[in-house]
Image (tube, rainbow, N blue to C red; front, side, top):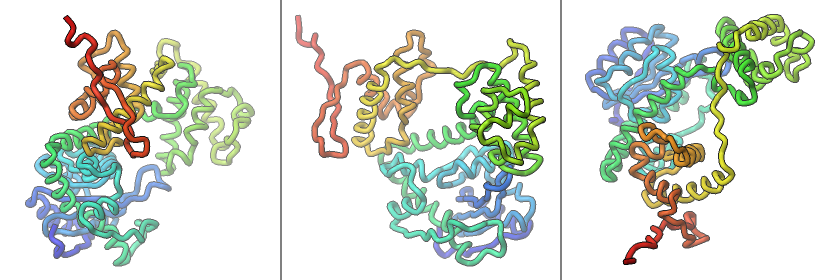
Length: 405
């Protein structure tokens, strides 16, 4: 982006139409949002910052009113949007439109594939890639309040000011490493994961569901729906209506009276006590569901006793592989991914069409086969330098039948 681009504050629909026309003509722009989510059911969108070749602007959604034309631009498949840590901003897009953009370039992901740590803050990323120092003095700003000070506006625009330069520099590096296709695949996976999490029933992400029977799962499902309805009507965050752990505890114990309900730890709060009868009615409805209509229990993986040890070995092999290739291990896979790989390898009827993440796409090319070889005893780990950050090396084990007659 040109550093001489003029800053604009967009406060009218006419100004927004003009801005969108300029961005559409350029075919590529960067954006970020400022929102407040602590006190309401849905995040309050307070500011949208955009940057392009000769554009640097902040859209004030409260002043403009209807910003749906902006989201239509974001969703235009002919437009590339450049972002940093795009997850939360894309969730707001999905919340507002029910859709997600097709062409996203996330500089945080690109950096992890280009040899930098992952995840890196924008401040650290701009410093390491561009040698640019960004201020961080407005992190406690209440973005709902107006007018914004010049310092607040400059801070907000710093979130997009250098995204083009970062994207261009990282693209060059990815092309030199032959990993641009990896990055594009990871951007697509990021968007799919956000869509998947939006489509999955929210209640199935509650903690402690494995402690419940099927009747308890039905109670948790109904309590979750009740909580969401109350939170939406009162425009409050769901956690302020009832915490996740308390919801699960109620579903587990299935109290039948107000006395039993109020005996639960942490229930004795005015906001909850006033809903006691409603909650008991929800539980009674859950008791009335036929057995064959109850939710299924979540999958539990009974792991053989050696899985933890094997996972530790694979973690060391993965770290060494990532260090050798100059790629952020935290972007490649987690301990959960390694356990999934071990379970998949041990399954006799595993589906080759549905491999674990570490054996799919660019991850298989990078490390998947090496990890399989470790699992199958074809590759060994040897300590080479205990004082090193990566003290082990991966070595092919000799074939005992080689050279025999």
